[in-house]
Image (cartoon, rainbow, N blue to C red; front, top):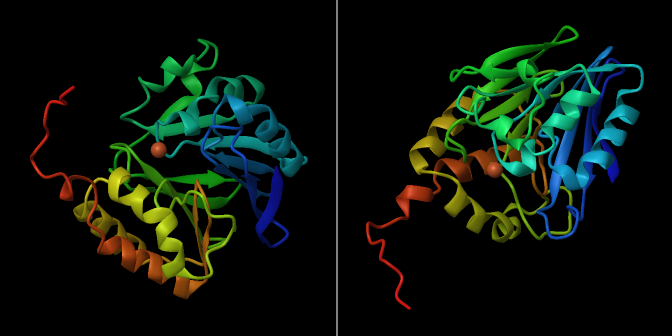
Length: 253
Ligand code: FE
């Protein structure tokens, strides 16, 4: 597992824990840790196959800081499957959409830690990480019905969860946007729900100062120009229900 510094000003650090193999058959995933002073947050820590590695790396990155928050962008297994272990081994609170707080416990949540799974309201919220603000931005239906992204104004990183995910490329940062499309187009056309929500999202994030868009799978987008290209692409993408013509058929043998 590689450990990549995306931002560090001495007080505030943003570290990418990159898992290139995803544990065999499982999809490749990126885990992100944010440390501000003596407080830390992990984003989308993942499932059981990578749990031990991610936990050890996270403690190494934290140093003397304590893990205070676990941010869960949505309810998928590659995000939350190992949540019980995270809550049992740390004192952190976990945060997930209010739509999912009654479903996530089915991954096996001990009674002891169940009250540390907190609901993020539909309109989003602002976390305090040792004095630094982090914004949980509503990004519902991209792809989950209860879905949040995390914006960090200190590092100017937008953690976009499944939005911007790419599969199969062998680089960590996008340098040629058009050549990169082949690794993310199919995923977005099926997993993202509609252009209406893509546009709503684009209109929201265009108002933010963003240097990096970091998805949970695949390569990240760095620099204002690349960030703008990605947002513009999203705003115009037909996807999800836009592409489902009303012609479901019963399969024939
Ligand atoms: Fe997902």
